[in-house]
Image (tube, rainbow, N blue to C red; front, side):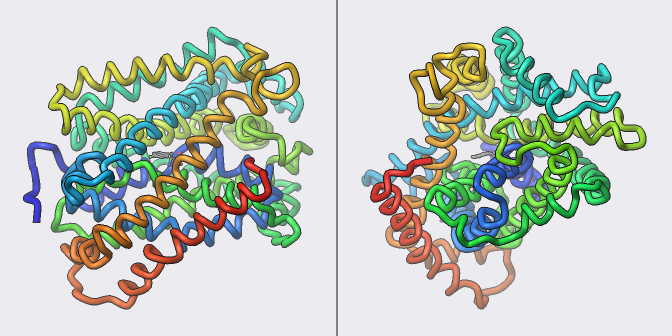
Length: 461
Ligand code: PFF
């Protein structure tokens, strides 16, 4: 067993770890990406497949990643090097580091929008009730403004680097402990409001009515990608966080808690947003602006609406921040562990490079037509959407395939289970065999089948 390395920093305990890992998992993926992807993919069918993937692929891969991390005490590249020396497996970790960098480069753009909306909420822009089309025009004015979009991205990147430079316990854990519970309470309050709107019935029906005719390959791929994206899987983020989880802590309990809260919050976001959308008469398939367009139409009908608006965007920005720090941490941990470079310098350097890569995404929302996708553009989708699907769906799915193959067939489910048992207090549990079966067979077969179907039908997104 590799000795625990206290020098690398550690989460103080179970609660801190769960909140930090939940902080990584809960973010724009839940509040921004889940509702709009569900909206574009017809609602209920997508949601059901998504939930199935959380259980059948998400939780098994989450347990696999955390075990790899805690057993090896390393960043994703180092982890594979320790557990499978002199093989090509560390390349899987490297793929994860690259994927994390690429995801951060579009994620930080959307995170920047949340800061822009926080400022708008403070100015009272949504105080006097606005219609869905006014709201859409306001959103477009913000994201289509090149200087503003780039500046907001820069603000967000600076915030992220500002936390990461302090390391794990002092930076990540301290922030997550306060912010995640506050976010949860606010979401419950907003859900209560949305459920009493006139469009609540229609919204919920859209979200939960299962229509099998909607089950197409892009919907299934989208649901799988969303499940992995939302749980921060497939790129070694949970390997990295697992490497900071003390051995005395109960790993399976932590994993299931994180998956539970992440899924609950995605569903809550849907329960808040779809009633609001149907009340305002907006189109659920409206794309990436959905949350930003829907929410401002509800605030004004709330008592102390402006306060709610400010709190909502503040917490959304914070949820995004606890996720961007986990994305950047993967890349930083690699350079700190493997190259021995100083943490703060690496954090600023990588943050700056990532900001440069984020600029085309920031400009792809109307500011530069060539990058905006569709007619008159060089791209089938906007540069931001393209990265979102390429890295957020395909990159994470491919990474999860390789991770499940590694744990199922190379490192071995027995070794992984040994790691999971540490701190869990039980030697045998009913789910051990179920988990091993899912990782060895269900995860890889499901993913390969989906890829084969995609190649077969040529429907990529
Ligand atoms: N899970 C985050 C979200 O739902 O917003 C996004 C994310 C973070 C994806 C970290 C991947 C990752 F490694």
